[in-house]
Figure 1 (cartoon, rainbow, N blue to C red):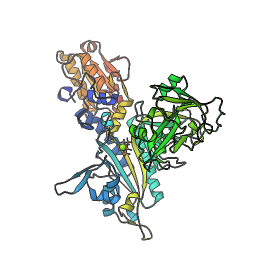
Figure 2: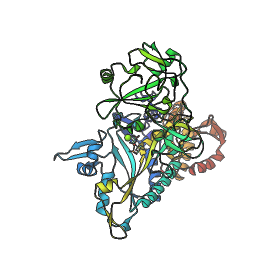
Figure 3: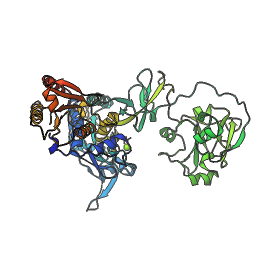
Figure 4: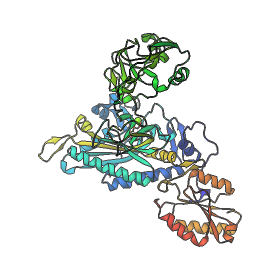
Length: 575
Ligand code: ATP
Ligand code: MG
């Protein structure tokens, strides 16, 4: 490709509304453009990367025996009513009505459609196992679309659905997909982890997420220092401490704490550690009352754990300030267990404290040296918090470390949920009708592109792993439009690359070298060759890898070997 004929649409300035690096760099390098919240076009440069991601996925899915098909975005409401999800999906499902007043939705996922296909097409165990997949556009009306294509409303997903006659078959299909995902993410060249997404599953898993590791990741994942425990923090149990609570040493005392509404402000104001303070969160209860969830000041509430507690609403709803004021009589910043008068659950670690600080249930007042059993009731103890660095691993092997990740894939055993609700049946060996066992397997294709950048960039721009790079090599001739010999050498090299099937960009725009180099660094092309009159005069060219600090001068005689090396790197042969 010649840069003069290509739509290179780089921007100098950081777009103001782009919060994370990948979003900034995708806009600045001219990969995507925004039309509305969470709605993007992919420009030619971005599409090249997207297609590489798709191609790797397609090759590995095909290799794993899955069959590609293409299902519609527009989905009739009837199918969703059959599965029961029409009423349960919530506002992420974009519903609409056509000119005949028929209800429909724009598909956020395709379990209903694929089950409908299956029940029409397949009727015998002989046709199983079967795995249908597609690479297709999804729409989810996300409450907070953000970070560009990382969490957009319209995005591309690879979704696959397996069908088996029994549970063992479902497990086997799931294991095949697990292996295919490993092959796919290995080929992307990204640092990733497969983590358990089941709560408390010991041995075998029925749901795993694949995360690209990056500090900006929305998810926290916990890894054990020994053994292979790895799970999304949402699902990880915090083991109850094995030590006993210390005896009280001081008597309870009220203190004025004006303006100290957060744990940080309180800890600073009273000169105590945050882990010596209680954090009392008030949530809505099923019976139109409130429930208190009490944690140590330095811990965070785990929503999934809270939702499982008796009486707590699911989804969890934090109580609004005025409702708290109305029912409890004071403000959110000064609530505590002493004389609280509503049902409370206390996290194990908070229940272990003695001589602690907590809200006094009076505005601008806290209590110091409070003790369970003496100053307030012995608590109803539960596991409420997210695990933190250093907690023991729930499987007993070592300690947990927390890393951040971006969820790019999810594999999941569905069982008979859809085949039963949608009356999909096949005949088994004995001629009995059975509802098949399903699995579903997603990859956020567009999100993979953003995650790759989030993990691989520097202050100058994107650094593509070879397998995803829009171009493998850029040729930068200095004075292409002024020097005949530079032009001839550049054209010659370009032709040689094209002939070899190398994905190459020739920067034949009349740009100053500095501008040309910074464009190419921003776009993140892995390899750069510079040709100049001076270099050619000395029978040399300049080579620089995108991650290298400095360029190297190499003899022209080594060009062929360099091209051969680049040609053997993992990339496709388009140019
Ligand atoms: P999340 O927790 O990030 O909302 P999810 O659990 O809703 O993800 P799935 O339904 O499992 O996601 O979808 C499969 C994959 O699709 C996810 O692993 C993710 O990579 C991708 N994905 C989901 N929602 C979005 C979105 N709004 N924008 C881009 N990709 C998405
Ligand atoms: Mg979601």
